[in-house]
Image 1: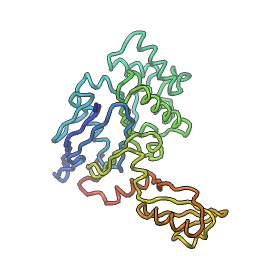
Image 2 (image 1 turned 60 degrees about the vertical axis):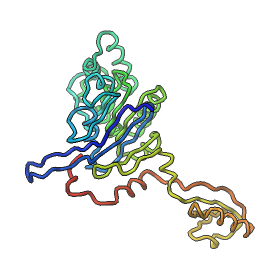
Image 3 (image 1 turned 135 degrees about the vertical axis):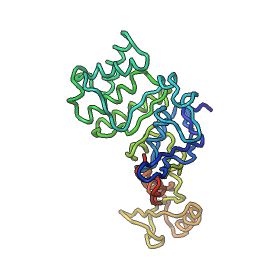
Image 4 (image 1 turned 45 degrees about the vertical axis):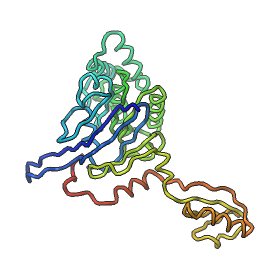
Length: 307
């Protein structure tokens, strides 16, 4: 199996000059992202998400452990040129949007007519073709976010590392980004996506990892995680709701849930009562429910304030 991003027992500590204590942002963190997937990277503020991303990009060094980006050690210049990166807080020079995108393309070794054409293409992809000659210093936060996405894509990267890519975007722009990322995956690219918008992650991510207090707390395919509640919803008709605890009735339809291991007994009870089974489905959880469950434990004082 091909991995495009790997963390192997990575620990990252910061020294607190005020108290002379060490703040541990990542604690023996291991993770592997497969080629061609949209991978959701979740966690509360201070969990260590941005630290992990900055290590992968080579902006800092781990205290211990190691990792690889596109098969090379973190920070390798050649590997970084094959990556598109969008930071959580977009900060851009006050230049024309098209010139900005060309600047970032040049940093990745692009040039000439190829760069000019690609800069126009990505600005059109993010819906800013009519603003290409405007100074980005006069853009709204949402427009700046879209310029940030354009610069991340200008080098046609194999891997996109995006930290809160839909921050400050309106609903229509979020749909645009969602379709853009799905299209990139369908084209064989890999997307590593950190976001607090759990509903967006739930819609597009193939797998999800949840980080808490610098440790990997949950990892799995999104569909599996959302169906891992261990309960089944049963919808029936022609029986009284009083026969099942917590049942709800509307227009002759009764719905209730039971533990998965009790599904067969519940169905037999319905049939013995003369009822008709309409549907039987696993209870689908939300990422928000799982996120709250994973992060229920309070943050350690050592990890507060570190992201």
